[in-house]
Image 1 (tube, rainbow, N blue to C red):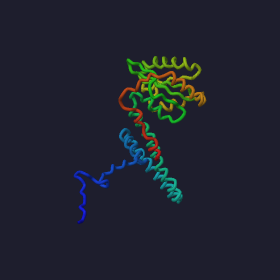
Image 2 (image 1 turned 120 degrees about the vertical axis):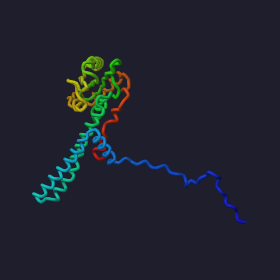
Image 3 (image 1 turned 135 degrees about the vertical axis):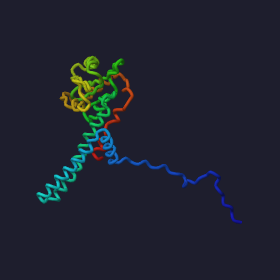
Image 4 (image 1 turned 90 degrees about the vertical axis):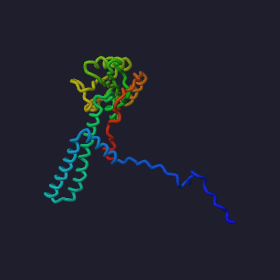
Length: 247
Protein backbone atom coordinates (compact mmCIF):
# COMPACT_ATOMS: atom_id res chain seq x y z
CA UNK A 1 0.00 0.00 0.00
CA UNK A 2 1.16 3.46 -0.84
CA UNK A 3 2.03 5.62 2.12
CA UNK A 4 -0.37 8.44 2.80
CA UNK A 5 0.98 11.91 2.28
CA UNK A 6 0.98 13.98 5.44
CA UNK A 7 -0.93 17.23 5.20
CA UNK A 8 0.29 20.32 7.07
CA UNK A 9 -1.89 21.45 9.94
CA UNK A 10 -4.38 24.19 9.32
CA UNK A 11 -2.86 27.67 9.43
CA UNK A 12 0.66 26.45 8.73
CA UNK A 13 2.61 28.10 5.92
CA UNK A 14 5.78 27.08 4.18
CA UNK A 15 8.99 29.08 4.40
CA UNK A 16 8.73 29.99 0.74
CA UNK A 17 5.29 31.51 1.29
CA UNK A 18 6.55 33.88 4.02
CA UNK A 19 6.22 37.42 2.68
CA UNK A 20 9.47 39.34 2.58
CA UNK A 21 9.68 42.84 3.99
CA UNK A 22 9.97 45.42 1.22
CA UNK A 23 13.44 46.86 0.84
CA UNK A 24 13.84 50.49 1.77
CA UNK A 25 14.68 52.66 -1.19
CA UNK A 26 18.13 54.17 -0.92
CA UNK A 27 18.16 57.95 -1.07
CA UNK A 28 20.18 58.97 -4.12
CA UNK A 29 21.85 62.35 -4.65
CA UNK A 30 19.17 63.41 -7.13
CA UNK A 31 16.48 62.67 -4.51
CA UNK A 32 18.28 64.98 -2.10
CA UNK A 33 18.71 67.60 -4.80
CA UNK A 34 15.01 67.45 -5.62
CA UNK A 35 14.11 67.81 -1.94
CA UNK A 36 16.33 70.89 -1.66
CA UNK A 37 14.75 72.37 -4.79
CA UNK A 38 11.23 71.72 -3.46
CA UNK A 39 12.06 73.35 -0.12
CA UNK A 40 13.60 76.36 -1.86
CA UNK A 41 10.71 76.78 -4.30
CA UNK A 42 8.22 76.60 -1.42
CA UNK A 43 9.89 79.37 0.58
CA UNK A 44 11.48 81.34 -2.26
CA UNK A 45 9.33 81.04 -5.44
CA UNK A 46 11.46 83.42 -7.57
CA UNK A 47 14.44 81.05 -7.18
CA UNK A 48 13.11 78.65 -9.82
CA UNK A 49 12.78 81.46 -12.36
CA UNK A 50 16.31 82.68 -11.63
CA UNK A 51 17.57 79.16 -12.24
CA UNK A 52 15.62 78.81 -15.48
CA UNK A 53 16.67 82.28 -16.65
CA UNK A 54 20.38 81.63 -16.09
CA UNK A 55 20.13 78.23 -17.80
CA UNK A 56 18.53 79.78 -20.91
CA UNK A 57 20.96 82.72 -20.87
CA UNK A 58 23.99 80.43 -20.85
CA UNK A 59 22.50 78.27 -23.63
CA UNK A 60 21.76 81.37 -25.71
CA UNK A 61 25.26 82.75 -25.14
CA UNK A 62 26.78 79.40 -26.08
CA UNK A 63 24.75 79.21 -29.29
CA UNK A 64 25.70 82.79 -30.22
CA UNK A 65 29.39 82.10 -29.61
CA UNK A 66 29.27 78.92 -31.70
CA UNK A 67 27.44 80.70 -34.53
CA UNK A 68 29.95 83.55 -34.69
CA UNK A 69 33.10 81.44 -34.33
CA UNK A 70 32.06 78.09 -35.74
CA UNK A 71 33.52 76.21 -32.75
CA UNK A 72 30.40 74.18 -32.04
CA UNK A 73 32.19 71.33 -30.33
CA UNK A 74 34.05 73.67 -27.96
CA UNK A 75 30.85 75.62 -27.27
CA UNK A 76 28.92 72.46 -26.39
CA UNK A 77 31.80 71.05 -24.32
CA UNK A 78 32.00 74.20 -22.19
CA UNK A 79 28.51 75.66 -22.48
CA UNK A 80 26.34 72.71 -21.45
CA UNK A 81 28.17 71.96 -18.15
CA UNK A 82 28.15 75.69 -17.37
CA UNK A 83 24.42 75.87 -18.09
CA UNK A 84 23.86 73.17 -15.46
CA UNK A 85 26.44 74.37 -12.93
CA UNK A 86 25.33 78.01 -12.68
CA UNK A 87 21.69 77.19 -11.74
CA UNK A 88 23.00 74.72 -9.12
CA UNK A 89 25.12 77.47 -7.58
CA UNK A 90 22.07 79.72 -7.48
CA UNK A 91 20.04 76.90 -5.93
CA UNK A 92 22.64 76.41 -3.20
CA UNK A 93 22.66 80.06 -2.21
CA UNK A 94 18.89 80.50 -2.39
CA UNK A 95 18.36 77.24 -0.47
CA UNK A 96 20.62 78.46 2.33
CA UNK A 97 18.73 81.75 2.41
CA UNK A 98 15.40 79.90 2.50
CA UNK A 99 16.60 77.69 5.34
CA UNK A 100 17.72 80.73 7.32
CA UNK A 101 14.33 82.33 6.68
CA UNK A 102 12.64 79.24 8.12
CA UNK A 103 14.52 79.30 11.41
CA UNK A 104 14.91 83.06 11.84
CA UNK A 105 13.45 84.10 15.18
CA UNK A 106 13.25 80.56 16.57
CA UNK A 107 15.12 79.77 19.81
CA UNK A 108 18.49 78.28 18.91
CA UNK A 109 18.56 79.74 15.39
CA UNK A 110 22.00 81.28 15.93
CA UNK A 111 23.62 78.03 17.06
CA UNK A 112 22.01 76.24 14.10
CA UNK A 113 23.60 78.75 11.73
CA UNK A 114 26.99 78.55 13.45
CA UNK A 115 26.79 74.76 13.28
CA UNK A 116 27.15 75.01 9.50
CA UNK A 117 30.77 76.17 9.89
CA UNK A 118 32.74 73.13 8.84
CA UNK A 119 36.22 73.67 10.25
CA UNK A 120 38.08 75.58 12.90
CA UNK A 121 35.22 76.23 15.31
CA UNK A 122 33.74 74.37 18.26
CA UNK A 123 30.13 75.41 18.85
CA UNK A 124 28.26 74.63 22.06
CA UNK A 125 24.83 73.28 21.16
CA UNK A 126 23.34 74.24 24.52
CA UNK A 127 23.09 77.82 25.80
CA UNK A 128 25.80 78.88 28.22
CA UNK A 129 23.59 81.59 29.75
CA UNK A 130 19.82 81.93 29.99
CA UNK A 131 17.65 84.64 31.49
CA UNK A 132 14.88 82.58 33.16
CA UNK A 133 12.46 85.51 33.12
CA UNK A 134 12.81 86.66 29.50
CA UNK A 135 14.22 83.43 27.98
CA UNK A 136 17.04 85.38 26.35
CA UNK A 137 19.93 83.07 25.41
CA UNK A 138 23.68 83.21 24.97
CA UNK A 139 25.56 80.60 22.93
CA UNK A 140 29.31 80.11 22.73
CA UNK A 141 31.76 79.23 19.96
CA UNK A 142 35.52 78.76 20.20
CA UNK A 143 37.94 79.19 17.32
CA UNK A 144 41.31 80.66 16.39
CA UNK A 145 39.80 84.14 16.81
CA UNK A 146 39.09 83.36 20.47
CA UNK A 147 35.75 82.98 22.23
CA UNK A 148 32.59 84.24 20.54
CA UNK A 149 29.44 84.82 22.58
CA UNK A 150 26.25 85.14 20.54
CA UNK A 151 23.05 86.36 22.14
CA UNK A 152 19.42 85.88 21.17
CA UNK A 153 16.95 88.47 22.34
CA UNK A 154 16.05 92.18 22.08
CA UNK A 155 19.02 94.54 21.96
CA UNK A 156 17.81 96.48 24.99
CA UNK A 157 17.96 93.37 27.21
CA UNK A 158 20.70 91.01 26.09
CA UNK A 159 23.59 93.42 26.63
CA UNK A 160 23.73 92.74 30.37
CA UNK A 161 23.49 88.98 29.84
CA UNK A 162 26.36 89.08 27.34
CA UNK A 163 28.56 91.18 29.62
CA UNK A 164 27.88 88.87 32.55
CA UNK A 165 28.92 85.81 30.52
CA UNK A 166 31.97 87.66 29.21
CA UNK A 167 33.14 88.33 32.79
CA UNK A 168 32.60 84.68 33.67
CA UNK A 169 34.75 83.53 30.74
CA UNK A 170 37.41 86.20 31.35
CA UNK A 171 37.96 84.96 34.90
CA UNK A 172 38.98 81.57 33.49
CA UNK A 173 40.72 82.83 30.32
CA UNK A 174 42.07 86.31 31.10
CA UNK A 175 44.30 86.62 28.02
CA UNK A 176 41.96 85.19 25.38
CA UNK A 177 40.04 87.52 23.01
CA UNK A 178 36.28 87.48 23.69
CA UNK A 179 33.91 88.73 20.99
CA UNK A 180 30.29 89.69 21.63
CA UNK A 181 27.70 89.39 18.87
CA UNK A 182 24.00 90.10 19.12
CA UNK A 183 21.93 88.04 16.71
CA UNK A 184 18.68 89.65 15.63
CA UNK A 185 17.04 92.04 13.20
CA UNK A 186 17.21 95.21 15.28
CA UNK A 187 19.65 98.06 14.68
CA UNK A 188 23.15 97.06 15.72
CA UNK A 189 22.37 93.35 15.64
CA UNK A 190 23.58 90.79 13.10
CA UNK A 191 20.86 89.06 11.02
CA UNK A 192 21.04 85.31 10.64
CA UNK A 193 21.98 85.55 6.97
CA UNK A 194 25.25 87.34 7.93
CA UNK A 195 25.98 85.62 11.22
CA UNK A 196 28.31 82.90 9.89
CA UNK A 197 30.18 85.36 7.68
CA UNK A 198 30.62 87.75 10.62
CA UNK A 199 32.17 85.03 12.77
CA UNK A 200 34.40 83.75 9.98
CA UNK A 201 35.76 87.26 9.35
CA UNK A 202 37.17 87.50 12.87
CA UNK A 203 40.96 87.46 12.72
CA UNK A 204 42.62 84.34 14.05
CA UNK A 205 45.15 84.96 16.83
CA UNK A 206 45.44 81.50 18.36
CA UNK A 207 46.97 78.23 17.23
CA UNK A 208 45.01 75.02 16.80
CA UNK A 209 46.52 73.62 20.01
CA UNK A 210 45.57 76.74 21.97
CA UNK A 211 42.04 76.61 20.56
CA UNK A 212 41.63 72.99 21.64
CA UNK A 213 42.92 73.78 25.14
CA UNK A 214 40.54 76.74 25.48
CA UNK A 215 37.57 74.63 24.39
CA UNK A 216 38.57 71.98 26.92
CA UNK A 217 38.81 74.48 29.77
CA UNK A 218 35.48 76.08 28.90
CA UNK A 219 33.84 72.67 28.77
CA UNK A 220 35.16 72.02 32.28
CA UNK A 221 33.70 75.38 33.30
CA UNK A 222 30.32 73.98 32.39
CA UNK A 223 27.24 75.33 30.67
CA UNK A 224 23.73 75.96 31.86
CA UNK A 225 22.71 72.50 30.62
CA UNK A 226 19.35 73.90 29.65
CA UNK A 227 17.91 72.58 26.40
CA UNK A 228 16.84 74.91 23.64
CA UNK A 229 13.11 75.67 24.07
CA UNK A 230 10.84 73.41 22.05
CA UNK A 231 9.51 74.44 18.66
CA UNK A 232 10.93 74.14 15.17
CA UNK A 233 14.18 72.24 15.38
CA UNK A 234 16.62 74.69 13.74
CA UNK A 235 19.20 71.95 13.30
CA UNK A 236 16.94 70.17 10.83
CA UNK A 237 16.14 73.25 8.78
CA UNK A 238 19.48 73.45 7.05
CA UNK A 239 19.61 72.30 3.43
CA UNK A 240 21.45 69.13 2.53
CA UNK A 241 24.74 70.48 1.21
CA UNK A 242 25.86 67.12 -0.20
CA UNK A 243 22.62 66.95 -2.17
CA UNK A 244 23.20 70.46 -3.54
CA UNK A 245 26.69 69.44 -4.66
CA UNK A 246 25.27 66.44 -6.51
CA UNK A 247 26.74 63.76 -4.22
